[in-house]
Image 1: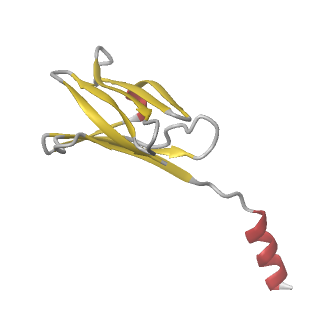
Image 2 (image 1 turned 180 degrees about the vertical axis):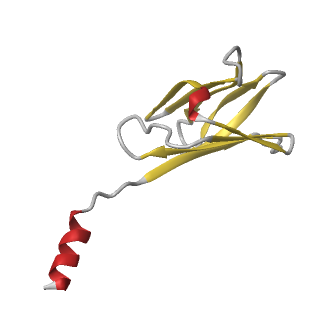
Image 3 (image 1 turned 60 degrees about the vertical axis):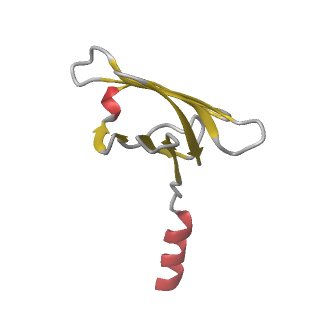
Length: 119
């Protein structure tokens, strides 16, 4: 009886799957990653991790001004702590003949080409 109750409990629980994205410039000077849910729109479910020239910063979801992750396109804008100006703008699209996403990441002081793997 206990085994039956345990099996019923295990089989009735919901599964929560996660995915994410990892992006980096070819020289590794800029990288950004995030965790997403695995359902319609792939919403962000955690902080972004941004690394610029070896310095790592975490960006909370409260500072994500815009986010778009659908099929072959990923875009996001994160704003600074004072909610005044963008600190990161990421725009990437899936390459036609590859699983990689390619585009640009714009920081306060520069814009770089970037490649991403999106799960």
